[in-house]
Image 1 (cartoon, rainbow, N blue to C red):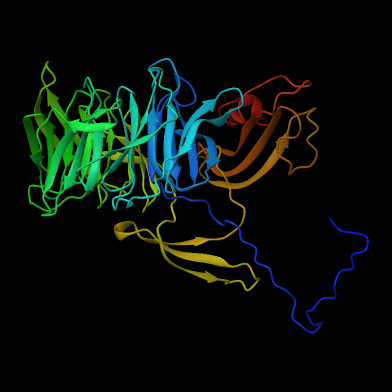
Image 2 (image 1 turned 135 degrees about the horizontal axis):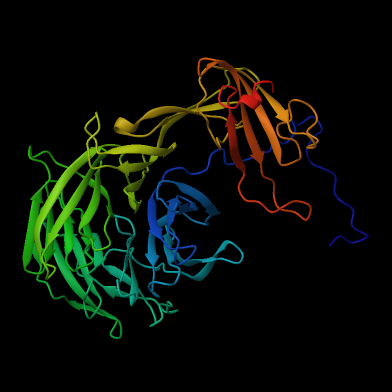
Length: 504
């Protein structure tokens, strides 16, 4: 606090010194690179949501009933970069799912959706960092027990962090580490249908040979024991593990895809020419795990079909190429043959799969695309108009997805509806009687009816104009009838179709 007897000292900065400069920092473009994506019943037990992680932001989209479109619901900032993202559904059907995520600074959170407030709430959070330990080179790996008995995080070499859960799926407040013999761990996952939590690991030894090994997790003893499967050698280029719902695990390598279920092994060669294929992402199509979508670093999309017997024994593996698209980092199958591909080095796309090949040989068509600036290899700031408003020109993407893009501040337009009308030459607004619309350039006025007149070259060979009647819906209030929607196209009137409208 200031005292009455205090007198501030004179400034020691001379009057002739230059004025002090300040820097103002603002985010010009939100994160657009997709690192993780999952599907869950997040907003409700009967809803289908797509949750996308983009660095420090979490987006929640609603999938339409037909599965052919996405509607954005939430865009939430996070205090940290997302390192892992998983779906936690301990209560089963009839209850909303929860989202588990961890950040690069070893913080975790269990998120839920509050239907009353329409916001995301935190059910549990904590710090899982250790004072000692070497961070693993392959990055953080999260694994969830299919029976929701525990959560697992691999963050440091030789350590596996376990967060136990209660019978109802609530996480306990105590987390502990268990020692692992495998120092260089490439991937891990929990097996389905085991009486005790069983962990499958893919690791590499000092001779650069890679192995598949299983461990059983003893929560009470806080230790790992040998699992039911013996350790087996896999291909030297094996990189990913995929747990199957009916038991077993898929091992993705550069030259083959193998299915391991204890003693039985089924393998399928990826390329007939022997060229290496580096898989980057995978997504399940069927709930029983018999079909999977795979994407490699070159942007090739595959479908893997697994043949099963009545006893859930694997009889065959079939891998088919669907076509060339973006190099995906996350694959989410939505519904009705619609797939979301998120990428950290290219644009995110929404594809519609088909059973018949198109002209280019692919078995899908693109429905929507979301631009991604990352990764930005280089950029330059330009001012082509000389008005002091700089534009950032970036070199974005990698390999075949590389592009040059311009980032600048301005006004963007969001298309809400489109109508094919060939030969349009002019457009002006009309107002219904009693609407109080006013001037000719104000659209539909304050009331519920309005129109737009389109002057055309030739319509149907005789008419020279058309009227598009639009019904503008406003928000419900005490003086208006509650309606839904934003824009409704009511009628399209052509003079040659409706005789009463020839003299409008």
